[in-house]
Image 1 (cartoon, rainbow, N blue to C red):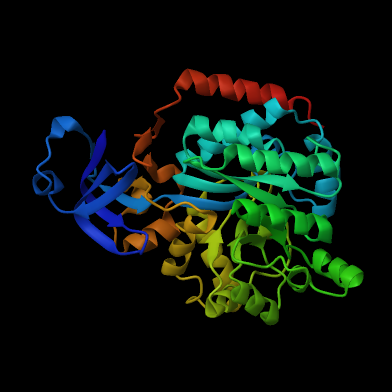
Image 2 (tube, protein in one colour; image 1 turned 135 degrees about the vertical axis):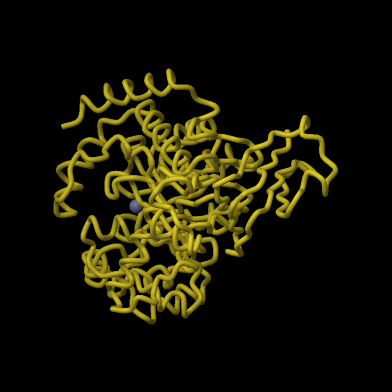
Length: 428
Ligand SMILES: [Zn+2]
């Protein structure tokens, strides 16, 4: 059924144009979804209310779907298990030993929780990297949001496949299995330059080219990584990936915190898509700050990610926008940096992970912290958070309405939460 959102107070489109007092019509046409924005669309299109699902837009603002372009959603299971620790100790003592204990079913429930959290926060597409990716696909399909699901490749294996050869064979199988799906895009995900050999990267590049799927990797997240690569390879991580021919438009690189101006130029020249994860970088004290100003100046395609919920500790892109903006203002001693248009553009950028943004998220403007509205963009970036999301429409399907999931009821949620409580009992 087509959907009409009527009499919206405000609307923002993916080009960040602001509208007032309009309707949005969401129609299924030629097998796809088409959006129309304008006044009195019921009359203009000569529509009968009975053929439509009508949603009241009064005191609401419609924005495009938010996109979480770097995350590891099953890590919802590890949310809050350990905070305020040195990165290497955090990984060695708390994250890796507990990840070893995860089964495919555990990953499925963790991913389900993550997808529901994102939907509740208006995140309609995401780019993930975690083991048991087929379980993440299953959870994503159940919730109905759009997922670029990475098949993780790492030289020492994953808790799913300890053996690299097995991992690589199954990687290709995974890509083949999910290619051509509507709301799922398979992605090949070599973990990072310090955990994947040249041969591993080249294999991933080959798969990425053969099946025309993106490649998703961590890149220059910490100073430790840069020093290690310099010692081992005599090159910085970005230079190294260039030297083995891996930089290109199909590459989605998360973090890029510790990069020089020269490396930024290289990322721009090759069209590498960089995902900025300010919350995670600050929480893990990766030190340094992704050079936002230089990236923008060189024209690097930028977007936002929360990273895994164990290092954030949520999947709220509305919150991440504010973190991003404040971090860069503080870092550069310049309040003009990280302006509202820049961060909004990053938050709506689902195109870099392969999804056209035709999703609609309605924010409820009735809460005290969102009044008055001098500037709707300012209220979204600096005042709103994920809890202000009221309704979410993905590909012409209402998945959240009046803050309630349409595919999952209260009882399902209670069952899920107790399932999760049981899973985490085995953690140390
Ligand atoms: Zn990550």
